Amino acid sequence: MENSFLYPVNSSTRRVIDISGIWKFKIDANNEGRDHGWKDGLCDNTLMAVPSSYNDIFTDKSIREHVGDVWYETEIFVPHEWESFHVDLRFGSATHRAVVWVNGHEVAKHEGGYMPFSGRINKVIRFGEKNKVVVVVNNELDYTTIPCGTVKTQADGKKLLFPFFDFFNYSGLHRHVKLVALPKESVYDITVKTDIIGTDGQINYEVITTGSKDVVVEIIDEDKVIVASGKGKKNLLTINDVNLWQPGNAYLYTLNAKIVDGDMVIDEYPLPIGIRTVEVKDNRVLINNKPFYFKGFGKHEDCEYHGRGYNPVVNLRDFELLEWIGANSIRTSHYPYSEEFMQLADQKGLVVIDETPAVGLFDMLNNFLAAGLGKADQTNFFDRDEVKTKTLANHKDAIRELFLRDKNHPSVVMWCLANEPDTSQEGSEPYFKEIFEYAKSLDIQYRPMSFTNFMMAPFGKCRAHQFADVILLNRYYGWYMMGGPELPNAKEMFKQELQGWSTTGKPIIMAEYGADTMNGVHKLPSVMWSEEYQVEYLKAQHDAFDSCDNLVGEQMWNFADFQTTEGIMRVDGNKKGAFTRTRQPKSAAYLLQKRWTNIPDYGYKK
Image (cartoon, rainbow, N blue to C red; front, side, top):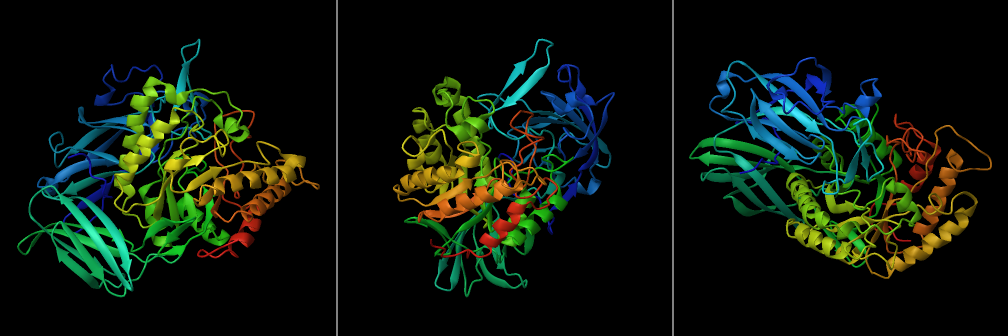
């Protein structure tokens, strides 16, 4: 079996040790480490925090912009009492690929920068002693990787990365690293589908184990009371007078799966679950059979010093700000977020549009500008043989892993399979037909699926929207096009396009709309980049939204300012945030708070 995607938890039968902290670290400037035995240990190393992005910690620009391999090393102590367990070394992520050695032996490798992976290490470790762990992480991108980009080698031999996306390519070990001890026969995977029948909740579950012994499942409520139970690896359980998981009012049960041998518990895994339903009906998205209106943001895992590294303080601060501003939802732009973020969303009742890392699916550097203007030259990205084969396969694998990891989160009500692909290209149609068919075959909850459409494929020119259940639009009328004094005309053009999309009969969510704004810049009358202009821009967008009955959600771009690659369109990053990168409000935040706290979560109609 491949790696289990169950989050590592301590239970009566399992043990977990977090080995994050300060590790040895070394930049492989000459691409020599793999040939010179660095897997056996690092010399002339420095130190690095795990989890974190390595890019913003040092003062050396060449390290921040490094393209290629970097190396990590630490020591782990595995106690003698774990000799009767299967012992796994688990990484929350490694951006964008990694190989792991323990005591010089390869134990794991993984492609893709945002998913967990692990390796079984029993055969290579010394119990009761310290063991050396070495990891090489590589951040290069090309046309076949998810996300996409290209590497160019300069005259001096130095590599530079040009991502096909508008956020900094932070790299490294971004999430926790853990030692996990599992029983020899263990729970490998759990899949849950829930339904509501009158006042009762139904749970259709499947438990996959690594052996053949019996399985018993208990459903435990928040008061620690068993409210349903059953036997077998597959079953349908009913909870009478169920407490639903609802946006802003989360209720979580625990599905406790046990492998038993008579009266003996062989393994036990507790999975938090929420009882709720999701469907698209006519031009509405229904949660628990009621039309839901999405209010919130596209977001990034991004903060000073940590980069994309997991930071629990920033996580909690972000959730507090989302609640303060009246947001009920986010999109995990443009990659899957940490498992801990998803757990908080479940606990807080935050609705999530869960996005794959498939961003940059067209041959364009600085594509944010092309996306806004809709004037880029045809590049025929989807006509490339490598895209039709390798990129497609890697895209499917990213979807498969995301669904395996996040399928049981009640907060996840929609899948976003790609961000801003150039679906004006003829070759995009068969590509996305296959992508959507594959994705729909994986999710037994039948959650709606979509991708974000951008200005290069406006209404009438998009060749893939027919596969989506919901239309997600990224539009910048009044910023990248027709900005400043043309804002009133931009609003009217925007209204016209929305009416065009409404003829599809599908619900529409504004997945991105925004204007770069320098915090503290005030101008009367307004000019672009001032806080006043951001407010005027948002009011114009909201007027357009309110003219469209099919529109069922608005997620502003962006929650907070974030880092990008250097360029003349960016002043130390993207400044479209309602909040600064240090999480303080701009004037726009108060406008959004007033609007969103007056729009109910359910049943909002223009």
